[in-house]
Image (cartoon, rainbow, N blue to C red):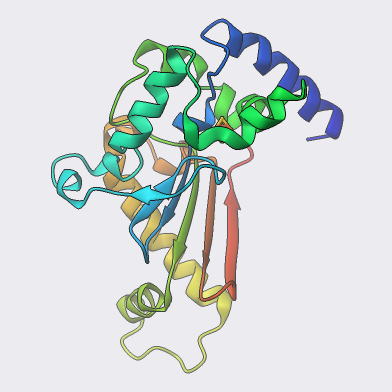
Length: 210
Ligand code: SF4
């Protein structure tokens, strides 16, 4: 996407978001960061991380992303209120500039769901399209062990990441199966970012056709 597309998409998003409220942001629905070592999440990476409730995961796996805190923040956005955690954007907008609220919402992986989000905006089973997962050495070891009875010494980064990717896609498929239905989760998730091992491992899988 060229710089001018990025800007014009954000301009269009600004107008569209205004039809809902002056504080609406699609990243609150369609983007998630999951920090497995701490059990915390946020939407885009600006708001503070908060705990995922393990109890709810038993009956609603999609609460991995749709936490009570995010649902409250979405409600506030629909009402034109400014969730405190999004102060990064509010501070920029105070200066009259456009913020990540407009830029993130204008990206295709976010804007494509505008109508569906508005049909059921407080759905606690909503599937995000931009997923970032941070994990630690224990998670890496368990994934490598699951796919190699005797893990190769110094397994190459590509092998490790390939296995983690497969594992996470399976998890995403099970977690968000309600929205995915019979189709492949890969057609729903636009971007999957994986990072861990102190930044040694980092990969990004993008489905640019979405
Ligand atoms: S309003 Fe800004 S900080 Fe809040 S989710 Fe959107 S982009 Fe992130």
